Image 1: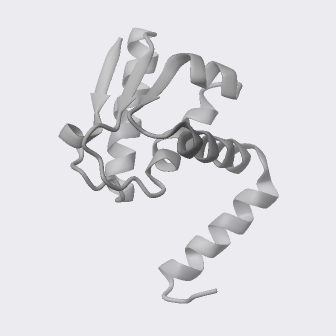
Image 2 (image 1 turned 135 degrees about the vertical axis):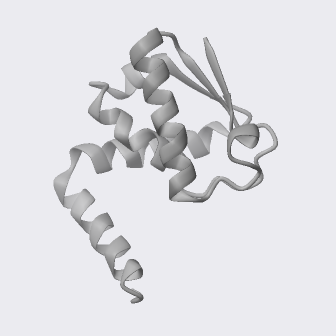
Image 3 (image 1 turned 90 degrees about the horizontal axis):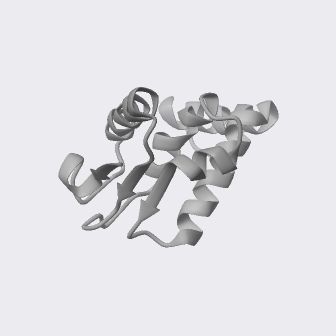
Length: 116
């Protein structure tokens, strides 16, 4: 079983998309090559805003269901409610084109310097 300690890999502030992409790539390598479950450890992490979504949304392209994903990845030292909410939104983003377009449009407005 692979154990990814976010505070060691990224630091105590897990907010940058680039950091999330780095962890996601590491997770995908582990999941594909070892077929072993992964533990994502939030010990020492103070902020993880949007980070869980960044590291999990791409995984919904690999796994067929929330149950399969949850059987392969464990999240520790973070409240279940945060993980569950992020995973629910991640699954919705991955499977609902209308929802994905709304989120992408909002993100693009902010990237262009706009607001709501």
